[in-house]
Length: 317
Image (cartoon, rainbow, N blue to C red; front, top):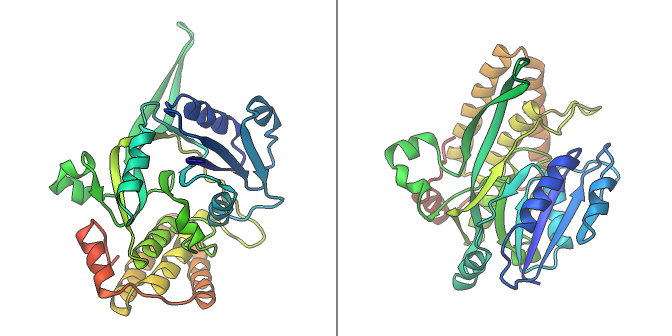
């Protein structure tokens, strides 16, 4: 088996079907592939979609376990040598050259992960013309690529060329199955948010490399977060605060860890004041401390920090 397409999903059957259809339009050039879906405790029935695509393998969690756990489980289910992870609300470009993807991995033993060139389509409103019976959708596109705006401002060419990178966007990426076989996986303390950055640090700590490839394109149609407040009071706001603290504690040397936590907690404090979410800010900090106590520090070495600095990474924040 050459390729495994791995799709985590929750309460988005229509998006999932569009994702499956897009995969079916690819030119596989004789390569073997599989599509595996893991439903993270949906309350919406997926059977109408799954029954239409008999070649898809579908699993479902009885209760939600979070994105990190789901991605790890998908990797365990996979038979492919190379894994292509796609969020359920993503569609790969039909011109994706899978043979190039395979050749890149085959030609470089240190290459662990390829980040896709993702375009997010944000629909922000629509207008209805009753006279002509037409609907006009107003939308904008945003690039979800592993470079910051200031980096692109000083060198716009980095998004147009193959480049080494220090992190990736989880909506669409490819990696080697061997990473998971060697216990390089997503930390399941990251229920949602920042899990890609922590996974990137894990790759770098094991002296592997990552690249961004501009020709590996995907379109993201982001929907409302599937993280819903529950008895544990989890939501995307307090989880991001907690996971920033956990990321710094686990991965950064002390000087960077202190600055990283200080800057991000201040940033979220300002947001909490503006959005009247001070209780979430407090809870996020408490949760971050609790998670850190369950984790183990393994700071990046000097050479690994150099990799970050040389490949569009940031250390102080």
